[in-house]
Image: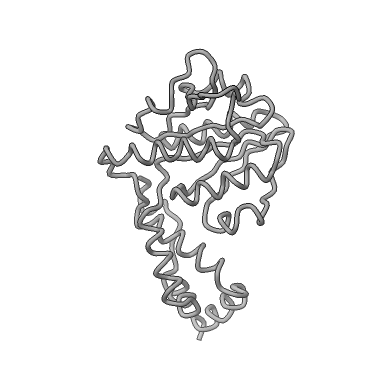
Length: 234
């Protein structure tokens, strides 16, 4: 964890000020969700062709308590579909990687590696292990490729391993949002067998999210911020 001096300061007064304009019920729900939020598992979407599929994955991640989703943009730029996310994008952190001059894949993977993730590409290629055999004994990032070609050759060459969902029928793959749901369910269920001290968010991370979430649910937060700053300058 970063030293406290390196962390972004939190204005508790501003947080308390916003809190006045949020119902007790809403704050109670947020607190319950915060206790179950994690960055131990994360999802990477590579060049998703259909925005509604990516948006469905965001909704899935929120449902499983996954805080971060990483989107690698190459040909396809991702724009959130609010009708599909059903508000889920409001609660998670979306990280986008686009690099015209270099490699968005490398940018994304470097950022994940620095945070201690082991990266697995989802693919039925030879050498891929079943999702049932993948043990979440360390931080895991799952990479899902686009609907037409799956993960790219660049991703295949740079991941730590490949993982797939066993298929019993003639169809070769699930829809990406379905695949993400099955994979995350399997990992979240397994992680209960481990006592990871850093599975859930730190108190500092929770405070950062409270600030973000409070601002997102309060009407005209910029006006409230001006009013709050006036009280501090009195």
